[in-house]
Each structure stands twice: as C-alpha cells, then as structure tokens.
Length: 275
Image 1 (spheres, one colour):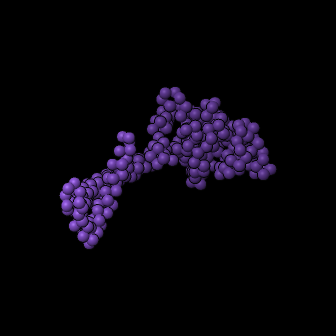
Image 2: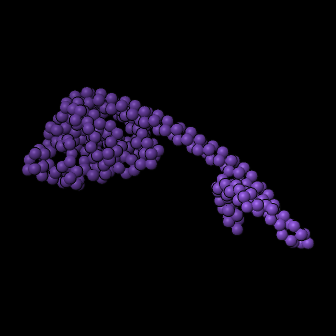
Image 3: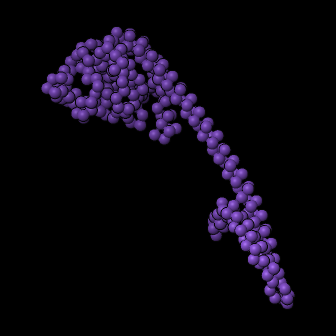
C-alpha cells in the first residue's frame, strides 16, 4: 500500500503540468457552459451552488498542480544542468588521462629506443613489451629502427600462445636459426614454431615480422609477481645470443620495471569507457 501511494504521488508530480492544463481547459468549459451557475436541492437547501463549488475546486487544483509543475520543472532543469556539468568534467578527465597515457607511452618508447641503440640493433630487429591485463597480453611498447616493424598488429594476444606464452610461463625463452619463412610456403617455419609451443597457423601467416631469432624475457614487479614480457627478435637467424641480451639488461632492468608497473593507462581508459 505504501509503495502504491508513493508511486501514485510520483506519477501526479510527473504529470503535474498535464493535469494543470486539463484543469485550465475545464475552467474554460465551465465558463462557456455556465456550469458554475448549476444548482441542486439538497439537505433542505433550495439552491445549493454545486456548479460554483465544482468551479472553485477546479481553480484550486489548477493552482496546486501549476505550482507543482513549476517546482518540478525547476528541479528537472537543475538536474539536467548538474548532469551536463558532470559530463563535462568526465570529458575533461578523459582528455587529461589520454594525454598522460600518451606522454607515458612516448617516454617509455623513447627509453626502448635507447635500449635498441645500446643493443646495436639494426632495421632488422625489434623490441616489444607486452603487459598482462585480464589474462591477456596487451602491447604497451614497441620500437625498431624500421618504422614498418613498429606497426601494431593485434591489440591483444592470448596468454598461452606462441613463444611469448612460453616465455611468460618459463621466465625466459631463446631460439635462433628458425627456418626461412619462404621455404615450402612457410610450412617449415610454422612447424618449427608450433612444435615448440602451440600457435594457430593463421596467426603465424598474418605475422608482419616473421623473425628467426627470438629472446623472450619475463619482467617481474616489485612484489616478485610476473608483470610483462620483453620480446627481442630479428629477421636474421643469429643476430644475438641470450647472454648478450641479459648482460645489456642488467643495467636498465630497474627503470624498465618502474615503467611497466606504472603503465596502467590501458586499464584506466578501458574502465572509464566501459570497454
């Protein structure tokens, strides 16, 4: 019963302007038809002015619901203005967040470019960094002397697929002298990769960079838990060794951990946008 009364009152408030308009129309009808002069004999009164009572009742209802409509309209306008203000603030926050994320990513990629230089990588090599979000790899950094090799392919990668999946589970993975991808229509290349760690054929076929020398190195966070993987790769069969990369990483590992730990732009942006 209480809910029924509450819903009824809410309904009357929402429809106040309509009810007020109906009352005004009824007043006009009463005036035109002289209904306000209508009388009846009741309770010993010869001319009980029922029409006038009806007229005044409509006037009172018209004033009441007219006042409610004005108040309700003001409240609605305030709510709309408040929602608009909050929407503008959210847009500003999203814009500022995107700027911060872009600046952080640019700084991270600049650091990776220094690492490329330190490793003496050429246009045939590339470094990529994948961080785990929601049990999937997300590319958070990539650089190469060749701008074509810097292009981003898939936005996310399964955590248990291919060499990066193997490196993620085992801590590191190194391989060299993979078959030439042009031999036997790429069959030798795919078989070599799939035999080491399962990966779909279409994924390999769509890879823009079919490298022959890989080193996958897992990065743990400050708490010791796995956070990301670094992928070093080359189109040449024997460009680098595992020991060479590990030795070069010894002096730059801590800054890498800092960048990776703080790189939460993807998560924040996806939460805001509901992706």
